[in-house]
Amino acid sequence: MGVDGSGKTTQAHRLAAMLTGSGIPATYWQNAGGRRWFGRLAKRLGRGSDAQRLLGRAGLLVVESVLRWLAIARALLRSRLSRRVAVMDRYAVCQYASIRAHRGSRVAEWVARRAYALFPRPDMTFFLAVDPVEAVRRIDLRAEDHESEEFLATSTAAYRSLPEFGSFVVIDGNGTADEVTARIEAHLDALGDPTYARP
Image 1: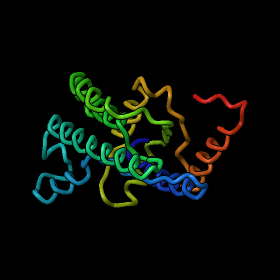
Image 2: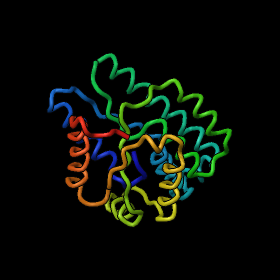
Image 3: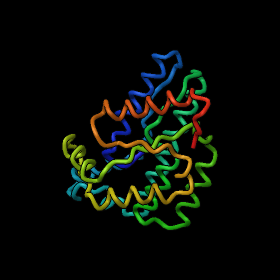
Image 4: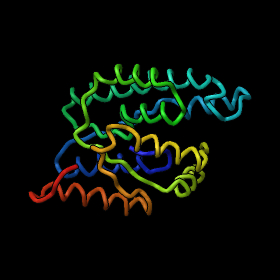
């Protein structure tokens, strides 16, 4: 998990491949909420490039919550049927953080939590902590959308404010993709050490 530009999709792909290579069949799942797609649609319709301007803040949060719920449900079902580990770059907590970052109401988060409560708690959640300046640089490099440093800082604060955050394994997401992968691998290796205390 992590804010836009944290490298979560790259690392989720790599983690799934690493697990599969070590004999644990795993599949990567992208559980996006459609914000980027609606942003492109807004641009085509002359509404700027902000999905929120197309659907409104409340409308976008509702659509995003529903689409992400469906994506997660599909991923969990297909993973269970195939007996493979599901590696996801977004999960329920991402929706709670999105609601907080976009100043959604407490009622909106309560409803989302009730809906997402059907899903199991992850075995492990990695949170990629990245400097907003670095995140913006990465987003601009892919040239598909844009986020401000201010919003990315707000999103990071939203994640950190979640009651679930204490159970996250925080990984330094700055640096090259290989460096971040090495940090994740080091943590996984440490799980085999009987003296290691899991968060």
